[in-house]
Image 1 (tube, one colour):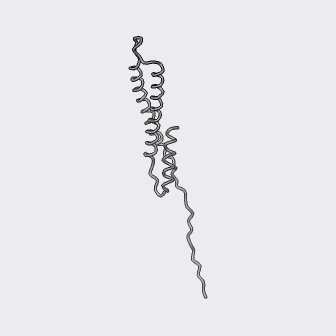
Image 2: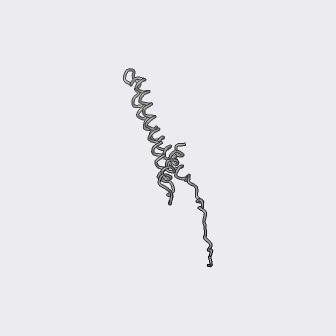
Image 3: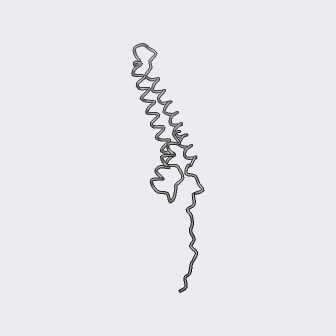
Length: 116
């Protein structure tokens, strides 16, 4: 009985030459967040100036002014961070052949990097 051996090609999995981090969308998300912050701060300062009156007794109290300022700053921070993180996660390069959990993680990481 004659046995024959044949060569079997075994290929090791290769790593992708591209990085998992796309810096363009991260910078775009950070820029969008900064721009939205600037626009909302200008709007907030305009609204804040309408609350103050040069005549005594006609303007709001300091407590009301401070509370509304704090609430506005929190809203501005949340909105700007959400928009910047969302854009960074959605504008990133599309990864083909990657598990959906990995895609979700990479999108989230891009959003966090835009916040930083």
